Length: 180
Image: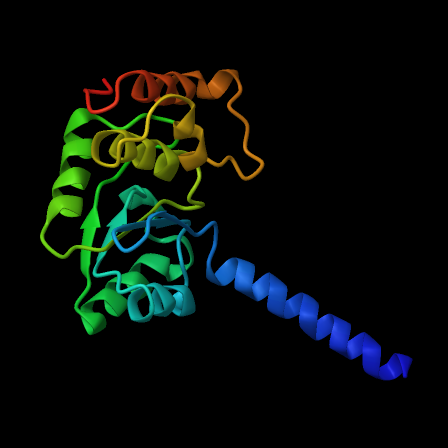
C-alpha cells in the first residue's frame, strides 16, 4: 500500500508545482480585458490565448533580460504563430513607469477588441505598478483598493522600494490623473 501511496503523492506534488509555474502569479485584473502574470511558458501562453482569448501581450522586461533561458524567443514564436500582438514596454526593476509608458499601455488596452496580458519576470513589482496605474485610470480603482492589484507574493516594499510605494500611493490618491 505504501508503495502505491508514495508515488501518487510525488505525482500530486509535481502537478501542483508545474501548475504554479505554468500560470506564474497569474491573476485577472478585469476579466475579459486585462490579465497579469509573471513570464509564462508555452502551456501558460496557450491557456491565456486559447481559453481567455488574450490577443495582446505587453512585455515589461528589459531587453537585457531577453537572453535568460530563451523565454523571449519562445514568446515571439508563439505570438507569431497565434497572431498575438506583442508589445514591449521595457521597465527597469523597482522603477515606476513613466507617463509615456503608461500611455502606451493604455493605448493598447483601449484598442478595439483587445484582451491584454501584461507581464514582467515575476509579475509582481513592475507588473503591479503598471496595473495599478491603469486600474486607477480605466477601471475606477481608488484609495486602498489599489493594493488588491498589487499583491506582493512575498516581496517587500522596504527602503529600496520606496519609489514603488510612493508611486502606488500617488495612483491611489489621484485616480484618473497623472501618476508622475
